[in-house]
Length: 217
Image (tube, rainbow, N blue to C red; front, side):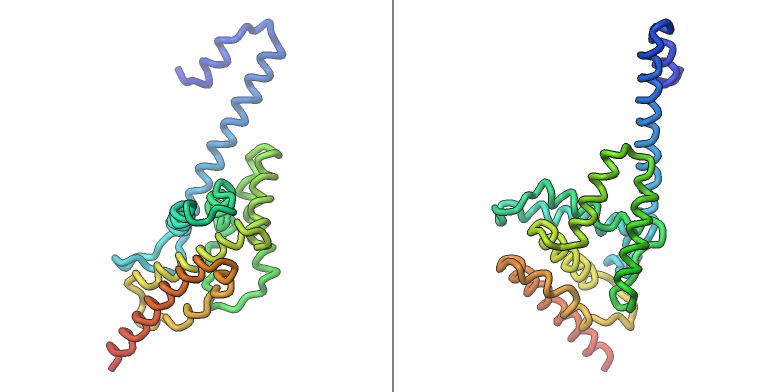
C-alpha cells in the first residue's frame, strides 16, 4: 500500500477538517515532486560549452560548478552573505529550462531575453506555493539586476566558470577564445580578489588562443 493511500486511511474519517488538511498537504507535496521532475530539463538542455571529453555540457552542470566555485570563496569574502550567494548560483539559469541557453556571441535583445526567461521561470515554478514562488522570483531578479554584492559576485563567477570550461573543453575548431577576454570582464571589477581570479582565467584563455594559432600554421 502506498504512503499516500495509507495517510488517507489512517486518519479519523469523522474529523473532516483534519482530513481536508491532510489531503491539501499531500497535494502540495506532489507539486514539489512535479517541480523536481520538470527541472530535469536543465540536465537535458545544453550550453555552448564542451567538456574535456568533447560532449556539450548541460545547464545543470554549469550551475552546479558555479555553486561550488562560490562556496570555496566564503573564507576570503567576509562581507558577503554566502547563503544568498549559493541560492543565487543555483537559481540564476532556471529561466533557460525550456528554450535553453543562448550563446553570448549571438546578439539578442536583452529586454526580450529577460522577459522570456522570466516567463519560463514562472512556468517552471508554477506548482510551488505562492511563498516559495515569490522567493525564487526575488532571488532571480536580484541576480539579474546585479545591484547587491552577492549578485555581483555570482555574475562575475558565472562568466569565469563559463570561460574556465571553454579553456578546458575539447571545442570545435572554429572556437573563438579571444572573445572571452572581454566577456563579462566588468563584473569582476567590484572586488580585488575577484579581479585576481579573473586575471588568472584570462591568462589561461590567452594560452589557449596562442595554442590554437600555432596549430593552424
